Amino acid sequence: MATDGIDAVFVETHNWGRSARFFQSLGFTLEFETDHNSGQFRNGDGPAVFVAEIPADRTPHIQIALRVADAAACSPGEGVEVVTPFEDTHYGTKEMTVRDPDGRPWSLQAPAAG
Image (tube, rainbow, N blue to C red; front, side, top):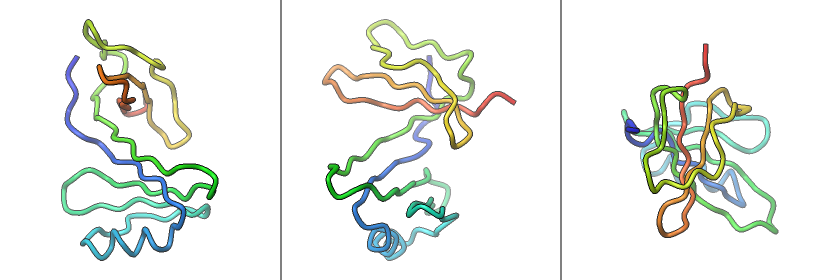
């Protein structure tokens, strides 16, 4: 199984407005904003940064999504723990979660089947 680099970084925040200004101050461009305090930024040809506001009682996390060209052809190699197999997401992709040797979760993201 091979990945094609980093597809996106998902960032949770307690304050969408402050986070949006932070990324724009670093040179990121807002590609789109949702109506529920989230949106996607990009800087050049690099991966997208998707920022989503979460409730104050949750701890903000960052998740890196690795790009996979084809979910059907993706089979993690020996020693890769699959936490969840590829599933359709509400944002139009297929996503699998695997765990690294230190217990951190990683997302593998593929285009939704057309």
